[in-house]
Length: 315
Length: 315
Image (tube, rainbow over all chains, first blue to last red; front, top):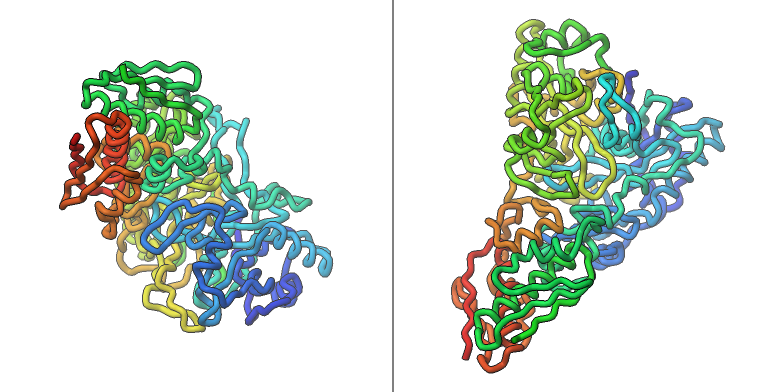
């Protein structure tokens, strides 16, 4: 099954109130089963999400919580669950002095475009709203799907086997993100081609209904091993924050946490949610170490999202 | 500029010693400027990287350091700098009871295939070796380029401006990864189509020489804000490990670290690399807090990759 990835020519400047579904159908020759990839930039422009406010203020408004910091750069989790530098607030390809923020509900915008295309043409197409995202561990960005409709956001092989009989349980290609990446290759960051048509996707990846949207591609916060940057995680754990950004772990126990805290020679007893450390009052080295151990247990418990009370008894 | 993404039919089973360049030229109608995407799986099979050893043993061999753990799953950094679950060791689409490990130098394998194709056809093509990778923050996997030759791994806009005159300094699309993602859409995880041709990439992304390879897409360890999982970072910082996995930060100072450590009411003096905490010997609460504060400063210094000696003086 071969794919064609075709940028749509002649889109021109998008302004507040532009009907994107009409814009697409006026400029693209669509077929049933095509996937239309629209950059978030023109969705935001059509929605009038341009601001003359200070960029930091707009980033603050889009921030659920800070994930990591580097100098003046903040990588944040947005209210819709995306993890993006500067909350996806964009100062490129906009008028100088303005910034553009992301739609509140990109899946809803994808559905609106899909329904608009269906209403005027009778065609069922998939729609992806794409945005550019940096990545952990790798240089450069790829486009991802921040919204989608009429398309499986990922393909699940749970319960399937390969030709050798090996289970494929954990394999789930992120189809909508891969579509966004393919479109980016054809769109040309500088060329102003904000709409791309991807033709030829296997039929089972296209849906008759809108489907779960790109929200299904957001890893649940409790399930995310990288919910805080490495350094930021340490600051959070030692600062006794609320534990957001740390994954939950059904296998975590206080006994494990105490073991990780390297209890050394001091007597430590775990009873329910209480950890009791004993040190000799007349041995300042033991009292100092008890204080350090208390800190380690408290921080590690937070990082494992366990409630505990740590008591030090001076005997 | 439209792209065509075409899977190559009829490849069949790859075994040890299979000449992949010949395999590609025998089955694909190539044109100058095409990019040939080859899954790492058949590269590994051709190299004979199949093992009957215990899977954990093979993962250990491929592991430079552990990045994060979840139950029995380890996300690790491999010797070539990739961050992958189980070091990319694969138990799917292989004979039951065997596992397949990744090539030591995937860029070298990409170059070999490219040179083989050029030698037999005279065509200059790009070659990408793809693998499937999980992601921070998002569900599902996308294919990425673990090796490439004859192709810009990313497109840099440093120094360029958009049509409004805004600098595009930080934008650098990861072209090779996006090509791998596009190819995955056409290859069909279950269909056994391990070679895909991507045609129509803009000419400036193709190189006359092999180029820097996909190694250029690996974020330098010192520059990576997510070099350790959130929970694993806390364990490392409180365990006093060697600081690998934490980013370096030229702006970090010991004064910042002491401030983050929340010094409370105890007197703290920073002098060079030494942090001196004073507590009253006859006040066990102060001695306990001094121990906890020492722990916080030591751990935060490690997370900021600063050397320090923390001394507690009991007055």
